[in-house]
Length: 204
Image (cartoon, rainbow, N blue to C red):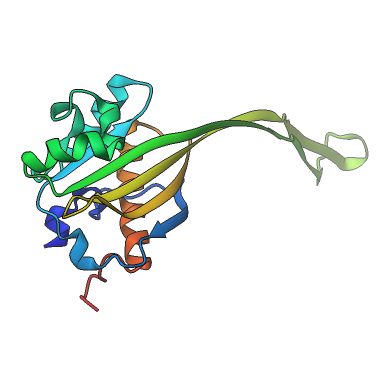
């Protein structure tokens, strides 16, 4: 079953943060749901931080025994994106699919939130004329948002190495590596269904 095998795109039990969205996606024109009926999948998360990469890969792999972190299989993580170098190794070990997550951009933006004054008139016997004016001032402040753009690609190793699907996701102010991976997984799963790569839950 697809939901047992495609761990990266399984609907995960915890909720998905609204800060993550798929901004674009592509599906191979000849890809079918049968192409993603995979039995052994490699998850490769590419980035500058070795610790973050391992945390992310372990998080995905912990959700299903069918998925294996690339750092435990390939000596060089970068080899996961070089299909010529890695395909033979993976096929010899029984892999028939690869999922690659790659951070392609990181952007910081600063916005000014203006302050506001809340005031009111009211009757007060101790004020001159019996009226008083009260209120408070809420000062403005700066906010800084950090946006991570991640490319997620799904490859099949059945026969020739084929790119089945690729999506670009945007995550604003991620709280943790683990949560970000989960958010992207849920959004990718939904987008693959929308693109017709995965069947609907009711099989229609």
